[in-house]
Image (cartoon, rainbow, N blue to C red; front, side, top):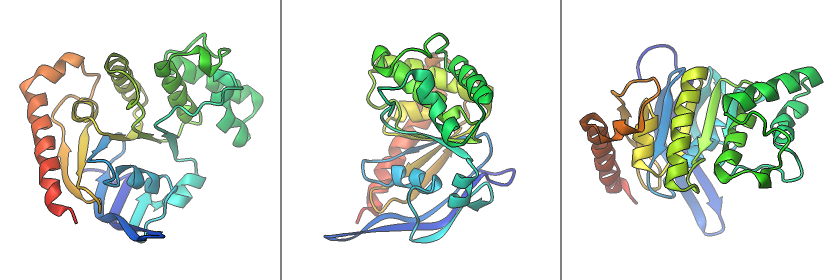
Length: 263
C-alpha cells in the first residue's frame, strides 16, 4: 500500500497468549501499512488471528513484540484520542435503551453537550438510513437494522477509523448483500478508513480496496491484494465480472497457500 504516510502501521507484530495449557502463538511477524481512506478486509481460517489483530489496533489486546502505530502514535494513545469506532459481531445494543439512547451512550461517556448529542444522533441515524427509528427499542428492529444502529453508534463521535469484526456474519445472504451495498455507500460518503474482518471471499472482494489474506495460527499475512475495482459504490452485479472473479481466485489461492505455514 504505497502513497501517503500510513494511518495504521504494523512492523513485526507478534502476540503470544499464556494459557493453562501453555503459550498460544496468535500472531507472528505481522507487517502491514494501511493508508487513510482505505477499506481493508482481513480474511483467513477460523483462529488465524484476524480478529486478534483488529483488537490490537483498537488497543483491546497488546502485542508481545513488534511495533504498532495508529495515526502515528501507539494504539493505546489512539484509543484515548478516540481515533476509532468499533463494531462487534453482535450488535450489542442495550435492550432497555432506545436506538437513539444506544447511539447516544458513547457521547454521554465522552461528556458531549446535550445539544451536540442530539445533533450527532440525528446525523448518524440519517447516515445509516434509520431516520424515524430513534424512539424504537432494539427488539422492535430486524437484525440488519440493529447492526446498522451499531454502526451508527460507532460513527457517532466521528472517529477517523472504523473497525468492524465480522458484523454481518450472522445475517442471511439477502440482508447481508443489502448491508454490503449500504456500507460501501457509507464509506464513500464519509471517507473513513475501515478495517473489516470476514470469512466470506465474495464479501471481502466486493467491499475492499485491499484484501489481507492470513494463514492459520500463528497468524501471518500471506498476501495483500490491491483491488482494481472502482473505489466508488459498486453494484452487486460487479461480482459476475471477470475482474471480480480473478481477485476472488487469488484470495482462494492465498488461503490455500497459507496452510503451508501451519504449525
